Image (tube, rainbow, N blue to C red; front, side, top):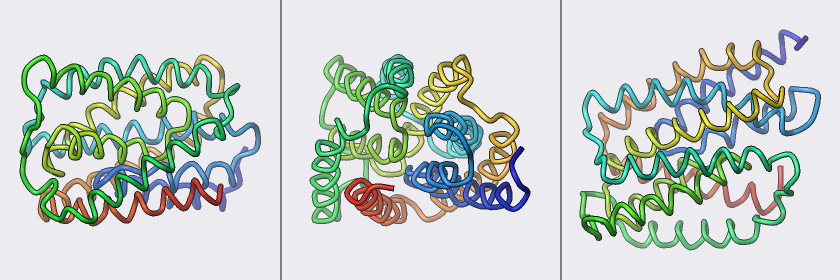
Amino acid sequence: MVDLDILIWLALAALVAGWVDAVAGGGGLLQVPALLLGLPGPGVQALGTNKVASVFGTAAATGTYLRKVRPDMRAALPMTVLAFIGSLIGAATASSLPEDVFRPVIIALLVAAWIWVAVSPAMGAQDRLRFAGRRHAVIAAAAGALIGFYDGLLGPGTGSFLLIVLVGLLGYSFLSASVTAKIVNLGTNVAAIIVFGLGGYIWWQVALVMAVFNVVGAVIGARMALRRGSGFVRVVFLVIVAVLIVRLIVGW
């Protein structure tokens, strides 16, 4: 059993994480550390519980975005399918592969992406697609597979990685990218839950309580993003990526 005060702490973390994740991704930066501090047992159990709480918030945010923004299925579909497969593989290796193997590469990519977005204020303001036809779908699928693997293996910051690819590489606006990222992230969360659930790495009672609060935060965040537009999403994205970089450098 989890003490009531710890459960309240986890619920509040889920509320804020839902908001952050709906706007710019990165809600796991709050939820996973909170779970690591609050739950006994191996760290992989925190990852599994985080996925259950997150999938409900992601679904709620996706539904909110879809009422106003049409996703580009040329990117969303191949990214989601390959990300689902990648997440299955990543989650299956989460208990045996150390995070330190990937940390230097991830930090370098995030720093480069942060500088790129920070010095390019026009980036992500409007849709300016850089590829067409099959090439567009292939690049989206390849990125989906890599990010899906990361999501299943570690998780925090997945939404931010998706925005980096969708905005910086494929040329979508931050708002368009947000709805596509939610669809893809929904697929990766479901895949990870399958693996973690079969392995017994989920605290279901805790996860479902957190899910309720994650949904509330996600709906509020998605509505704010829709109301304030791509510029708002860009600012939140830069803050979240900066936090993610610090988290990876100093550890958690």
